[in-house]
Structures are given as structure tokens and as C-alpha cells.
Amino acid sequence: MKPHFHKIPNSSQRSFSIRYDKSPNFGTLWHFHPELELHHIINGQGTQFIGDTIRSFSDGDLILLGENLPHTWRCSEEYFQGNPKIKVEAYVLQFLPTCFGKDFIELPETQTINSLFEKAKKGMFIYGETKNKVTDILKDTFISNELDRLINLLRILKILAFTSEYETISPGYANSQLANDTEMQRLEKIYTYIMSHFREDISLEKVASIANMSVSTFSRYFKKMTNKTFLEFLIEIRISNVCSELIEDRLPIEIICYDCGFNNISNFYRHFNKITGMTPFAYKRKYLN
Image (cartoon, rainbow, N blue to C red; front, side, top):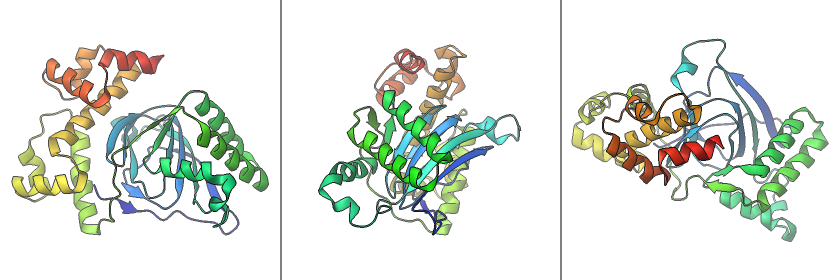
């Protein structure tokens, strides 16, 4: 999907922003912005779209997004039912690569930070002791005075610049162009339908009719906009939701398979292994550990 440019409100009194969000959900807008974003999800589960990658997110995730990297966090359906007891919580730190001044990033002493910004352009999933250290500083930054906030940002960048405890989220991503309003409305309509019906047997004809296109035209359009076929996109949505349910550890793997739209256990295992590089049992054991 081509992303929508998102203008982040800036204060002339601050060189970067940090906020604490608590709301029913994270919204659905597929967007990008020139600021880097460090996103710590305190509470929340669902499917995230970053670059050309679809994967699940859950409590405790820490993500660093580079400048102009398209993203959205689509919460699970229960977050859209109006239940006041179900909310998402997150700390969000956003800053321009030039927030310390345009010459800062060119200094010999800051080349490791410059390298970090390059790695972040494809997204970084932070884990391990690095995540623990950074989230502690992030919480402290939110309540600190102005000078300490600036120092804490440098501390965070230093930790992330030297860590090996991360996974590249979207290694094959090539930057997209801004979509016009008509395309955004059409993609949002397609996207919303798929997210609401992925557990069902969705036909290509049905989704093409929602886009008001013929099947052949829609197939070409969808491939152009997402770099995936419709079936590949649908399978990744289903696998992402399987991952979320595996982490919740409430149901057996076979039941999760059918609950998330797969009607053949062998095909499910094949697709899961292809997308995640491991079996469902291995994935569950890894993340529960």
C-alpha cells in the first residue's frame, strides 16, 4: 500500500517529542513521516505493517522506525468494540535526524549514530537486555526536565548504535511514493475488509468488487501497490494473527490454524514455516521463553 504523509506537530520549544499514549486502539492510518520513531508498546496486540512486512505485535515490543518508513499498528478486533477496559498503552519518541543540528550527524564522533539511522530505515525490532535498558530510559525521559531529555536521547542512541540485540524488520523494503486521496480511500476500504474477514474464505472476486475493479485489473493494481499478490498478503495477515494467538497460549495450535482462516493443516504448517522460518511450536516456545 502506498502510505499517507503524516505531519507530526512540532513545538518550537523542543527539538524532539515524547508522549505517552493510552487510547482504545492505535488507529488504522498507513503513514510515514520524516521523523525517526521509537515505539514501546506497553499494552496492545494485533498486526503491524512496516515497510513491506506484516507481523504481529504484542505487549512489551520495542521498535525503531527510520525516517519515511511507512507503518501502521492494526489492533485486534476487540480493541474496536468500545470496551472501556480494553486499551492500548505506549511511549512514542519521535525526532528528526537533524534534531541535534545539521552538522551533528557529520561529526567523526557520531558516525555510529549515522549508521544506526541507516539501519533504522528498514526497521529494527529491539529485544533482550538492550530493550530493558532503553525502555527504562524512555520512561525516565517522559518525566525529565528539558536538558535531561536531550541527554537521555543521546543515551538511547548510543545503546542502540552499539547493540546486536535487534532484528531487521523489513530488509527488502524499497521506499514508496505518496498516494493520492482516492488511492488512500480505496486501499483503506480493501484493507479494512481483509482485516475484518481474514478468518473467512475470501475470494479474489469479492475483494476486486469492493475495489470496483475487474479481477485481472485488481490483481495488477494490488501487486503494484503492495509488492505482494492478494493471496500472499492474505496469508501473511493470517499468519500474523496465528502468531498473536500462539503468544497468548490459550488454544492448541490446530484450533488456532482453523480459527485464523486456514482449512488445511498441512498448508498451514508450510506457510507458517515459509514466513517465520520456524514451526508454530518453535515460535510459541521462543516467545513464551
